[in-house]
Figure 1 (spheres, rainbow, N blue to C red):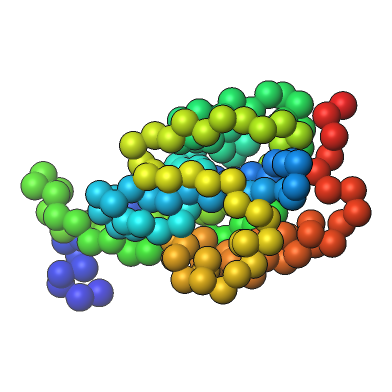
Figure 2: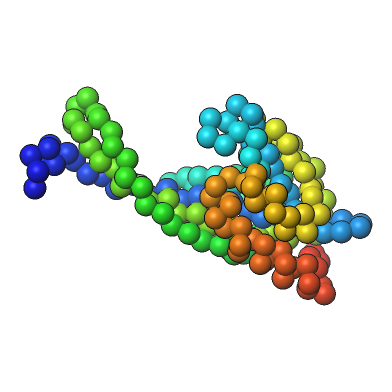
Length: 183
């Protein structure tokens, strides 16, 4: 052990993030909700985004994504809507973050970020009311997600999930039934 290592304390943190790829029926085509981060976003200004965010302590992934959808878009998912929601992508990364705390001295935090993307199929056409986090929210034709320039403008973590998202949208586009009807 190096002398400077003896002074460091280590802590582990796990952050759960849940996002949603929301499909809805339309008269001419099925659509996906694509958000644009606000221009004053410190990390991803102007990038495409999916509704969602950090899951709170003690909250399930499903409850967290429903809350985040409501906070960021004003869309309140009913229990029937939640029945049309399923996880379609998961990844986990680890980062080391060095901090200096006045009381504890140097410390290293091992941060695990767990990301889950849900697909949500809505049989209705909800109004979108954006939070301050986003500057735009558009219901784009679901096939627009397959366009190469969309990947270039997505947040880096969504771009990493892009292959899975395009696979899902591609399967959806070829399905004969479309969005499940309300029961």
